[in-house]
Image (cartoon, rainbow, N blue to C red; front, side, top):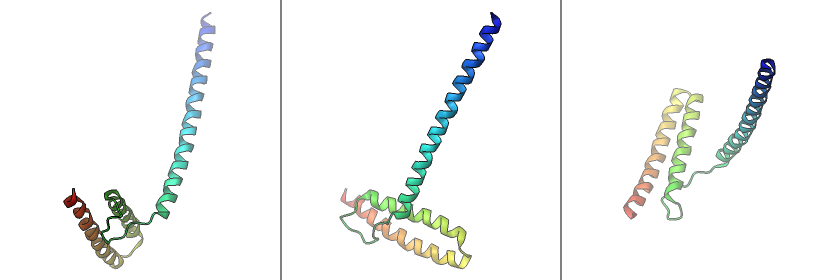
Length: 109
């Protein structure tokens, strides 16, 4: 009798643990597809123009700033220090222009 209970317990434990592994695999595969689609989206993303315009929203400027920030972080690793100095100056100019556009939104609201 006790043997049967132990065997049933072990079998149920095996069944439950197998389902968790399968679910984790499904979640990981769906996460991989999400990551791949986001990577493709980021590769094709084009930031908004640095000239302030009413056709862009506040969120567009923020997203562009974030995109430039990520781009700078990846480029810095690959460049030499002299190139990084120029890269920083370019980033500073772009960031300043976006900040002016964002400030224009704040004044309007």
